[in-house]
Amino acid sequence: MRPVSAVLSPLQRRLRWARVLLRPAAGEQTLPLAEVPESVAIIMDGNGRWARERRLPIGAGHRAGAETLKKIVRYASDRKVGYLTVYSFSTENWSRPEAEVIGLMDMFVELIDGELDELHAEKVRMRFIGRRDQLSHELQRQIARSEQLTAGNDGMRFVVAMNYGGRNEIVDAARRFVAECGPDAGEDEFGRLMYDPELRDPELVIRTSGEHRLSNFLLWQSAYSELYFSERLWPQFTTDDFEEALRSYAGRERRFGGR
Ligand code: IPE
Ligand code: IPE
Ligand code: MG
Image (cartoon, rainbow, N blue to C red; front, side, top):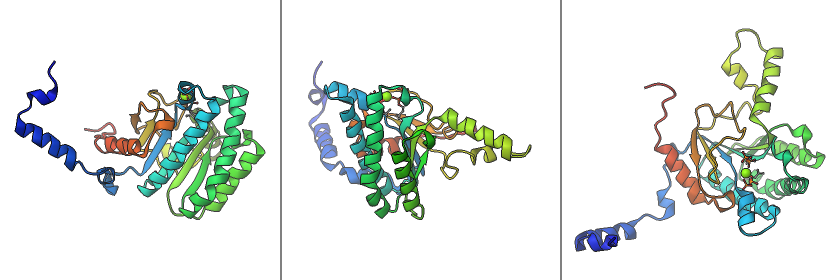
């Protein structure tokens, strides 16, 4: 097959180059703020494969993933995302090797400790969803500290799903629904019994690493979310990839069952 350039006229070739040269810088390709979704959720997947591909220990993959998270949180806050929810540990992840789980829990404590002051300075409001009573006392202490310190902030709400399971959340809500709500209560009342009642349903759910499933994440809240799957492993996911996901969302037609 002949190369593309060989079948283009000189004028077409010049136009092609003009397009390349005039392509706006990355910053100019960002979506107008009005089109940025209010609530974005991310299933941060692929740390293990990233480490395996490099013959590194699994913990190195999780630490590389933590570096990505730091960048994406700041970027989302700069882009005026109202709510960013990230899946950091599922109720099913306890079934992993003990050394990996212990390493992850230690890393979460370190991460909160190391990032909290800066997030607070950026007016981020932190919340954790999931069954926290099964976490170590140290981690519970850091979680409580971060929620208390940032409670009055008016910036992005940063929600971390930690020991979180969507089915657990629905079962916990169902127990309270039966105990606290009357016979006329419906979806709105039930939704207010989720772990973070103020969390807006995500308009966009991103999953990295090429896996196409929810893995028990935000089952109630994602009923009408737009799903975006990236082939990138989480440690490789960049702010440009995030922007690309926002652009994909902005180009979708949401119908909610209507015409
Ligand atoms: C996601 O990366 C992080 C957690 C689940 C804690 P994985 O560790 O699941 O990465 P893969 O799927 O094995 O590549
Ligand atoms: C989902 O990823 C959980 C988190 C990203 C924290 P998993 O890697 O645990 O999901 P599966 O096992 O591939 O479904
Ligand atoms: Mg995984």
